[in-house]
Length: 120
Image 1 (tube, rainbow, N blue to C red):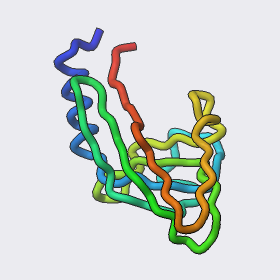
Image 2: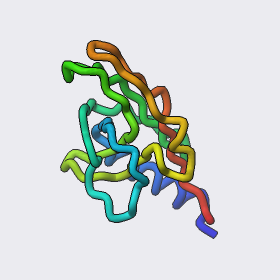
Image 3: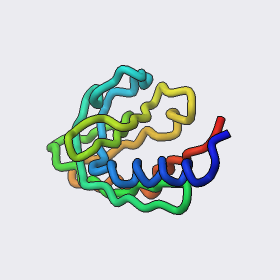
Image 4: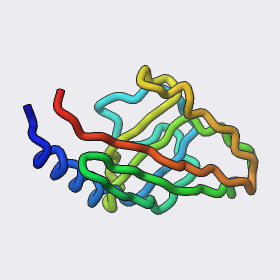
């Protein structure tokens, strides 16, 4: 069993590393070998907080691409642009609920992407 001290330390590491939240239009399932979003259309500085072993990422992106975008993938990146985590429409762990239509000039707000470190 990993004890709470280490779970909290892992969460603190994630909190310290997350720098940007990015958005894309490709809903292909996430693979452990992914290094980037598959069709990125936007990026924002992430607002990151932590309570114990739970890290929460928030942010608002304004679509200024000139066209309506269907957001099907989200990614967390560190300051060096390394992909830390991705969720996409085809992911078995809840991806189907993430798709959002964002008209040009409109905002997409991620209220809480929650990452929980836990044993098992």
